[in-house]
Every structure is written in structure tokens, then in C-alpha cells.
Length: 478
Image (cartoon, rainbow, N blue to C red):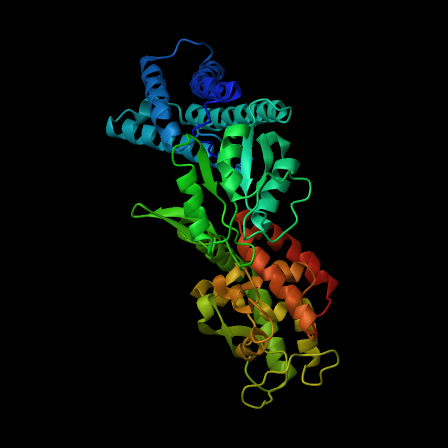
């Protein structure tokens, strides 16, 4: 909610400052991008061929690329305000747009049958080098603008409506991130206020709103109210109907359990998603490729080890090699998880699953080694190939344990918003093995929900790399 400034209040001369400089910044960025693409192309050509005299094919290719960039970059939102937006998001969008330009360029060259006119090495070097310089260009610009805005230049004057947790978070963000250039003038009281807005000037109640809009001349009004405050929000919109000012709704969702909430448009209708998984669409495809690739590679590399373990299981006690147990997967769907059997064959009462404890007599001597090293989990690579599990995700619990803890821990079943994993954030944070207290399970669930909220391929990689270290410590697994 802290991005894309709208129409400024025209009463103040300072508001005009932003309008002029926003247009200037837009022009500077567009010209800069064109110059980077062209200059890097000339530099790569000079290094590759020894001079700056571009052949006709390279000249026409450069012109096409520049024209494509002038169309694709604005469409990708590269010239809109990034105030409040993370640099990672902007840079990701930049590389996606730049890759799109190059893909279209390649398709055009293929259609014109001119691909053999270009050096593949030069083209690849140009793509990487230009992308890197474009990235550096934007990071430097962010730093410069952040420095300027932190000193009060090109700032946004914000009038806040609502002393809520959402309003409190906005104020904290404005204070802790001065580079965003957000100046909170004060707040208007409402019947829905719930927190003490310490350090923020109280400007009165809703009856004083029109006066303070005229007196304070804010650039934006941010309404930080709960969803049940429809009438109040409508009243504010009516009061500001004839005022040329940007109004933002920052719903107070902090009383709700939200996972990966975001706003979008569905068939032209604005929709706010309150709870969802980050692993959908392209992200879901990327994680599926990650899972299958790693699982297949590990199965091939570890086949001899798994063969020896299977032999050890068979010799250690009578019974099958694999242990199968019902677990809840994505969306709560049941599946059979596979493990190397580490206990003697035994039976339990229906609806009960007893976790292994230190000194558990059911565990065989060989099984104790397997469990402490987590080698008993290796058959779950087959579960990953089947699509029941992921390499990284919330660990799957026995169905009986899910029934037990879902009644005691609020939000417990939200951990099934992603496929269960062979390893996970909870495991590398120390919540591995037996969860003999409600507090331990609560800690594990908290890690699982955090993983779902913040999932990325990079987070998966960090968890995968850290897992062997955790396994070597051999703690909490009996």
C-alpha cells in the first residue's frame, strides 16, 4: 500500500514540485535505459570484433532492441513509482522485461532467418552485461532518491484516518524507512480506534476532516480502518468527493490470520486475497521442477546407499523394508508416506500413534542409527517424485497427530497450504524429532507458517544447504 503516488493536492507549491520532477525522472530513466543498451552493445562489439563500426545486421538488431525496450519496459511497469516497493521486486521485474525483449528479438531474427548473422557469444555477453548495468543504474538511482527524500525533498504529506494497528504500522514504516519520503501529518480519530498512536498528532475526529484537508493540504489520505467500517469509509469518500487528492484504503487486517494476502483484479473487479499460497502459477511450476530434479538426482546418487540400508533393515528384524503411514498432504489430502522401517513390527490402538521417545524399546539398534541420522526418510524421495511431497516444506505429521493438535493450536491446519517436505524451516530451527509438549509443536507450526508466507526458491536453497549440518548434530530424533 506504500507505492504508486496519485494525483497531488494542487493548493501547495510543493505538490507541483513532485509533478515536475516525476516527469523529469521518467524521462531520465527512459533515456538512461536506451543509452545503457546502446553503449553496452557498442562496448561488447568492440571487445568481440576490435572496432566500433557495427555491421548492418548488428545495427538493425540494436535499433529493434531499443524500440522493443521502449515498448516492453513501460508495459512491465519499470517507470512507475517504486516508493515503498522492495528493490528485489523492481530488479526482478527489470530482468523479466529485459529477457522478454531479447526473446522477442530472437524470434524476429529466427523469422527473418538472420540468426546466423550474429555471434552467440556477443549476444549472450550483451544480454548479461546490459542487464547488470541496468540493475546497477536503478540501484544507484534508488540510493540517490532515498538520500534526497530522507531529507524532506520530494516527500508525500499523508493524513491518516484511524488509530488502528494498520495505522500504527504505517507510521512505523514511515519513520523507519525515511527513504520512502512519507510525512505523516497526524491522524483523525474514529469510533474504531484501538491503539495509542504515540508520537502522532491527533487532529480531531471525522467532523474535522474537511477542515484539516484544507488546512494541512495533504498529498494523500490513508484510511486505516477494519473491513466492518463500510459506512465510515463511504462517509470519508463523500466528504472528499470534490477534493483532488489521492485516497488509499489500508484495511486493518491485523486481527485476522492472513497468509500471502494481496490485491488483484478479477474480470475488472478489484479483489483482495486474504489467504493464499505463494506456490501457485509460475512459482508452482518452478518448485515442481526443483522438487523432481533434486529428487531424481538424489535417488540416482544414493541408490547404492539405499540398497545397503534396505539390507540392514531386513537383517535387523523381521518385517517389511518400508514403513507406510497415512499423512496429510497439500490441502489436507491423505497419502502414504514412505520410510525405511526403524521399529520392530507392532500394533497400536485404532486412532493412536505413539511418537518415538528416548530409549524407546520398539526401535531396533539399526533403526536407532537410521532415525538419528534421518536416513530412514530417504524413501520419501519417491513421494517427491510422485508429487505427494516436496524436498522442502512443512514436515508431514501423522493423521492422528493432526487431529489432536488442530484442536489445541489455532491455525494449525494452515501448514497444509503447501506440500509437506522432507526437510523444512522448522527442522533447521531446532524443531526436529519428538514434539512432546504443546509449546514445541506451536514452535514448529510457527516456523511452518512463516515458511509458507515467505517462500522462495532462495529460501528453499538455504534450507537444503543447512539441513546436513542439522542432521550431523543428531538432536531430538530418537
